[in-house]
Length: 326
Image 1 (cartoon, one colour):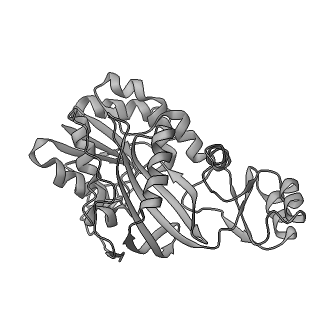
Image 2 (cartoon, rainbow, N blue to C red):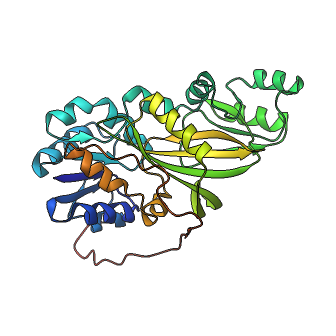
Image 3 (cartoon, rainbow, N blue to C red):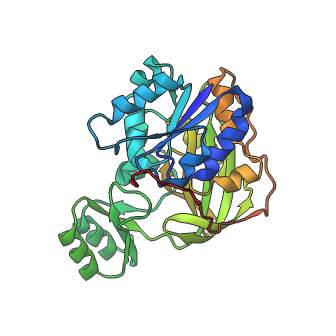
């Protein structure tokens, strides 16, 4: 059994976890478009590949799958997830199972307004969203929403180009400068993150880990503490199962006046997943069991609460003599 981790970047922990869990049963192969991506050096094998926008990118990845006899493949970056889902059959044809939800669901996750519409349809609390600034102005005048609000790209990740604004003038300026923006209600409450796994075989949600976010940086959780709430577990389980998600899901949640609101859904490992793994929520092992044809037991909330995660900086030193740095 061999696992391929695409666009490994700086996610050393995920690579290390899969190496530990796979043991002597197989190898972990990693790719990146830069040989200065530290995580690739934790893998058993590393391939330097073109950027995902290159015309031959998919063919290169499929060739790696054939050469390395890859059993399962997943990516750690958003722009690659749609490709992986869309080309599922081509990966399966070379023996590699994409660990990703179906294409339309992945696309819905990356289109914030489509996700808003889905959540509303499912009657799950979420912040109000507006594609048109005129619709927002009408809602604001009617008292349905108030400043401040977020202006953000309809499609985007890593909290890029998100602006908290407090006036009509600021909204007009941003809509004049950029295309494909939306306005989202500012949710002034406690933020939580959930690491969720949905079994690839049964479609059941088998694990949920919830962390209360204490400090954020560049869209990722820097400090957090594990918490448990059966009502939140129930809401998340029903949501992911009804939607038909598969594999690893990262969900952002706000609590306002005792009500949980889903904010964003990312169909991949979240940046704060190491917190879950350290608390015993072992998604790499769940992936490997599924790839061996075995279903995972449902163990939602099977972790201790009040366990804190505190990120800190590490460095990787490597002699690159004779290599071109890319």
